Picture 1 (cartoon, rainbow, N blue to C red):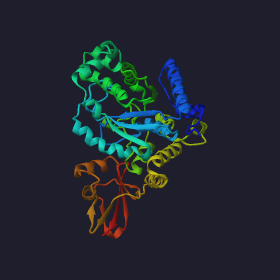
Picture 2 (cartoon, rainbow, N blue to C red; picture 1 turned 90 degrees about the horizontal axis):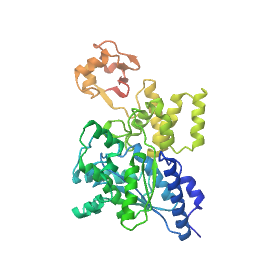
Picture 3 (tube, helix red, strand yellow; picture 1 turned 180 degrees about the vertical axis):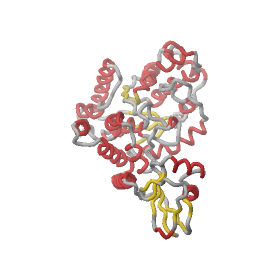
Picture 4 (spheres, rainbow, N blue to C red; picture 1 turned 120 degrees about the horizontal axis):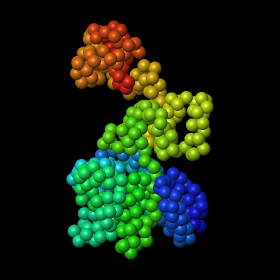
Length: 410
């Protein structure tokens, strides 16, 4: 009995969300994927599928999980998946989405950051069916002659036609030669893995196509490429990235993830619902119809969205607790994980804010009070002379929007 679902059923799952920004490319890749799946079904042989992730920071964020979830779909359909950590490409950094050169890092730095990637990947991927590979294994072995051979398949014009390079060139900004090597290195990954399918973001299309070209040059059948939309960051403007400070890490505390989702700009909620949740298109459409018709408030929808996202990576219990903590914070109550400060004697509020670590200096504490940023038991603090006493029992202090402290008698 064949281990695979019929090809039409696999195509329905695997093509969901695929976006090339070009109809002809979509049709071409759709046809090639169907051919590969049919051959796989006939021969009862799994396809080799991979996606690469450069360790530019120690943490994976929600943007990474879009391609990871597609890898998981391939796994669930019986195919072989490789989670490739770009320890060598990470030394250069992908210039695809940048209008300035990335800062280079050493191989040791990339390896150090890669240590947490493999473990975090299993929040999405099946540990027992995932191959973890590192591309310094083969890229570090190439000779200068090998690199010249790879470069001979591309022209400078092809690279300068890319939007990010073109803008920098027109401005007279530096376009470094090593940045051109990135596409060659990523393309060679496909050769080394002899892959059937590579997955990436829409900004990766040039690099993925480079892989097809290099595979053909090495006598291999060119890989099928599938690209997916980019997840916008928490600022609602730039793509999600740890370096720009607009990311949501999948390993962050549940309450932090929940709160960040609640505070997303309204304009990006559809982007997150489409790309990050487990909801089907009909469910997503129903949610937004309810919001448009006034049957569901946008805040209530964001709460559902936040619960769904926390549940995916941290589990239902963590999502329930995060939702309860968010409700408590919204009503001025301390969340369940709020730190506790034992008060033994009367203490001025400004001193307490500093000693508890809610602020970094007394000056910051004063400014926070002056800017109406401090509450005690939900009551706005208007005087910097406020003194807390143990006799008053437990009090809840809120500093800013997200910092809470439970003050209890010692």
